[in-house]
Image 1: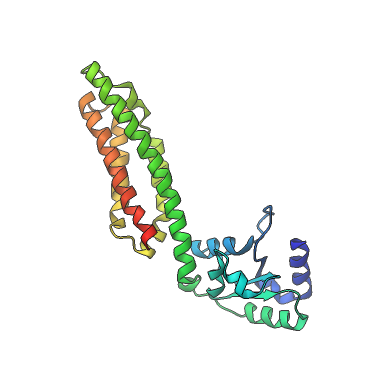
Image 2: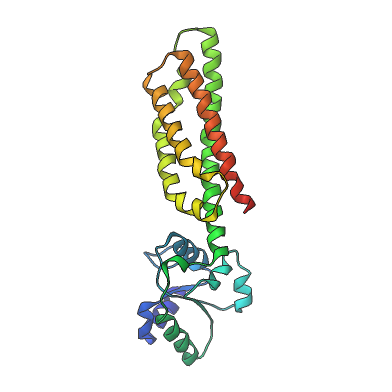
Length: 239
């Protein structure tokens, strides 16, 4: 049904080729590159990969749509809402208006929608970081017990420190860095450097470049560095 409405709108109104059209609450299943509701529009605008005007349609009053978790995206430049059913002339007027809107790159999304999206993405990353930190702490504690039993022997638990895991986190954080900087998390400017230092330490542990005691100290350094980064990123929920 949703696809049929979108196809009908594009057929009836030629100007709609310049406008992204989607149902307010999206589809149950994603289909190709079609837009998928308020949340999808918010995410794409926040990432900067949707610079076209958007016509969002639905059957609810606009006031109810605005109550949705992502309803604030209706305040973003070039985002329009039309409640169906509506007269063709009314829909045409909105599409004509939308088709001629220019979206400034630095104003593609309203501040609330951007902050909501950014905080959600940062908290998801923090959760993955916390899981890595918990694993590192567990293995560091195991390694300490091994070293106490067998001084001078490299603890097997340190083999669980994988540089590839930290590299993946570093790459992922690089994609979040713009979001972090824009919402202004205190102390977040230190995170990229801390992440790189963490990677170097894990590479040293993994490569067996230091003696067992130093490797163990590096392991606990990694735990503390990860927890410090998590604390910084945890401030996002306060914004």
